[in-house]
Image (tube, rainbow, N blue to C red; front, side, top):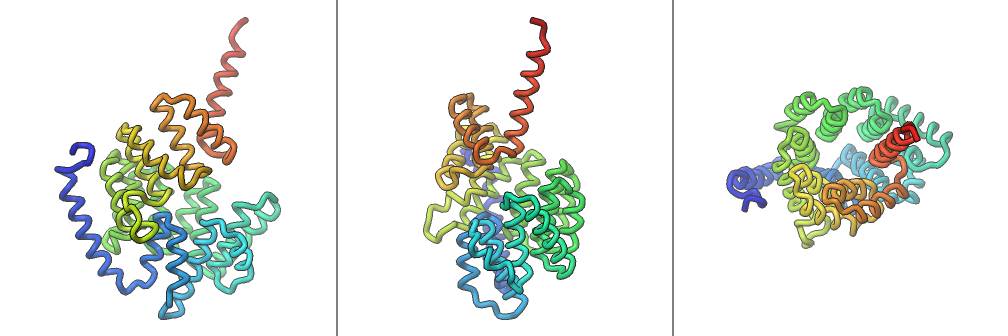
Amino acid sequence: LKWLGLGSSFLPLRRSLVGRLRGSLQAMDDELQEVRDHFYVGNFQRALQLCESASPSNELTQVECDAMIGRCCLALGLFDKLKSMQNSENPGQKAAALMAVVTKSPKQEQKAAAREQLFLKAKETQDSTCSMLAAIILGNEGSYTDAIQMAQAHPTLEMQALCVFYCLMCHQVGAAEKMLHSMAGTNDDSAAYRLAAAAVKLATGDAEEAYFTYCDLCTWFPQVDGEDQQTGSVQLQIGKAVALMQREMFTEALEELEAALAVAPTDADVLSNLCSCMANLRKNDDFQQHYSKLEQVCPSHPYVAKTRSIKQAFTSFKSSLPA
């Protein structure tokens, strides 16, 4: 019972289910809320299917729906479809196609040209999808202040959540809490808000509540209707594992990560968290196996870079010792 968190945590969970119903009723007039929710929890295939079967009632919704198709294709690595969007009249689809070049092209000239085009498109159109992808590029480059400024120009829940994540990446927990507070009251049961809230809970030491949030999202947004609702998207499995590791429940975290690994055996975030988990469980052989795979699929990953720097520091120290 203690591990399940029943007792003091049961009533908040029950209230969250009531709140979920209330939030669903509030979002009934938002045609794309379900699409956004599935997209942000990592159910990209489900979100794509919902977009393709949608019948938007107005032009603005159609524009957002088409842009979301582009973002789903980007997340799923459907590069043939993205290539066909390079000349799309929809700015979000065009931005997704450019983002694919920025993140995947081996040629630096192509990357730079695509980056320039995407930022120009964001400036000219003021389209929220263009601005979000441009902000993500800035964040990936470490320009968090510029990324937040760009995202704040579009005060949607999704953009506000992005700002919360970037504040946390800069270790500005207080600023993240303030931004999360400013998000409250619009749609507190949207996936964007709940994910931002869980991230803040992790940063402030309330890993138990963060874990329950990820579990709730797995239940509310199954990848396929009728499937086991305890196992969510790869993204949610990682979230649950991180929350469990913060509570020093490494065996349980390993179970969550192994479920994610079965679906995404080359995912860098899965592999890096497996490395952390194995290190804490002192399973050196398993650690080396996952680390070698991570080093192979993502040699520039921060976990790899830090591990290499530690090894180099020990090597330098050893060589400096007198014979």
